Length: 196
Image (cartoon, rainbow, N blue to C red; front, side):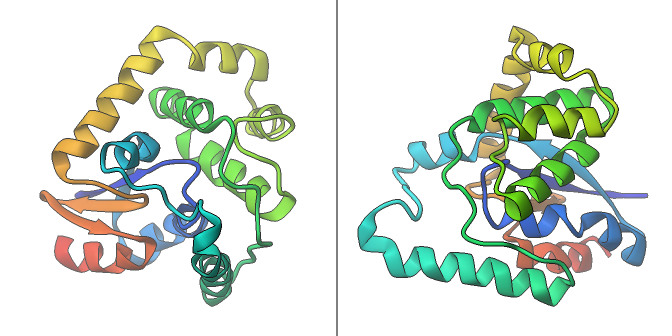
């Protein structure tokens, strides 16, 4: 089965929508997604792009939260917005996902950490989200967090971010099929069409 690359950063609000539905999308379309965490924040800094932060962008921020909420409803799940944003421990949340990819639990971790963020307003990368998520998927939280902070994981995180840049990825979530980039949760189905 051919794979679609799913490039994302925990911290991206719209990525919530993808994380909560991709497993169903896989089953319905007989496709497989390979999950790649990277630092969209680093990419945005390179592009001098500061999303949704300034008070001057209040209407855009309000639109973003309402849009995420609407789209979640279309997909059949909830989004209690606004959620805490931006994340204080953005990098740690993503480094744990990097470790999860290496050890085989990336999907469970990412899905649950996002659910706790958008439903319980617990920030990814911070307590209680971090430890409770890891414990709920059967991991030793203290050991896992320590492993996520090693130089090895840092190098993979930086490498993924550089790979994202080289592929032309500038936002999260992004889907890649044969060097074609599809940016945004709403482009997931376009990536599937391109694959077939």
